[in-house]
Length: 274
Image 1 (cartoon, rainbow, N blue to C red):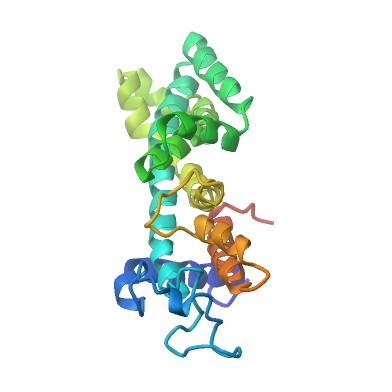
Image 2: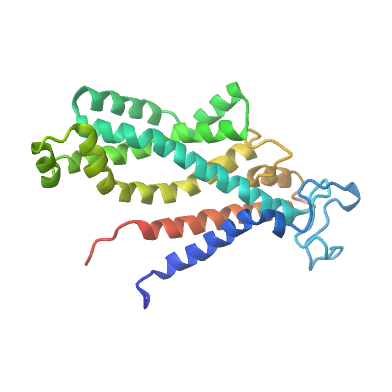
């Protein structure tokens, strides 16, 4: 515990996440060069501090002579936008289904849980690749696919919360006063179930960013010329022996972001009092 009660890990996660968020928000101002400005004459320049470096390109350049730093900060906007949007889509699908299944029970619960079981039987990334192979990769398509393969986690947690809350005294009292199911759900169940859902959503952002990076690495993610950390990592792999920075810096950006969000999201989970 810290003096103010906020764990040190949470503070570190907050700083790391804030840094990436600010980089994404102010990418046009922070990028020293246009992210798609190509010049083969300056291809594979090393970072500042290594022989042959150019001070105008702090982290060096890629195989097309594009500034790595500029591409990293612009890619931060892409990754965060996809991650947050996918979490929203997953929550909008999974939360209502889970709440209705847990609160109503019976056949509704059985149908929803069988849908959950059916989707859990398929590896998420394999399912995403299969869908994107048919529909074609695009930013909107990636958001929808990641959201639709991630809804099951929200549905299961929301169902568990609804199963518990529907037997609580305040819900029973409202029901005895004539409140219908929609009112009970909206005014009594949702406000008390939203805490765990938000905690899972905070952690799930990092999972969605990793999934987007994985798809981009495999060539199924965000399409050029829009930069993405996964596609930058894939491009850097091809020139790793002669220009390691092309793979290391995008990889570090992914690790930094995911680690920071996980530290921050982990602090959101309720802790039992000793």
